[in-house]
Length: 175
Image (cartoon, helix red, strand yellow):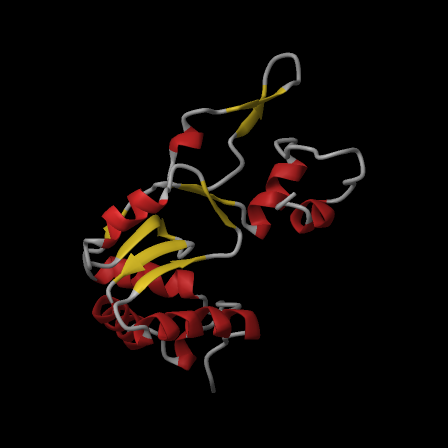
């Protein structure tokens, strides 16, 4: 029996291996992460600390570490993978689940500096308003899941009148 790791999630693990191979280490972010207050200067300042840092807790959408730290964490993720016999009920293993397991085993530098959702809500008049405090975070992660949730719960900022489904909202989130 083998572990259940689909194609997309397999590639998510591969990016960790790539980071462990880069001389000097560096930043890794998801393609659906957009900077807010993270400037080049702030990024350089953060990069001076070689330790492994996740800016969205166990969600690996914005991370920084030295090559040695990337190597250490990916090896720990591999060590903590479950035995195939113990994966009953797990639909697909992900790097997010693996990172969460590493965080349970050892102390990592985790913060909640990435906004996990659109920073909008409807006021009493039904007008979409931005939460300016959320806009002060380093970045915002507009994941597939969040775009779908925002669309379904009327928090999605409409760009024109042509978006009719959550799927269209996800595909147009960079507009």
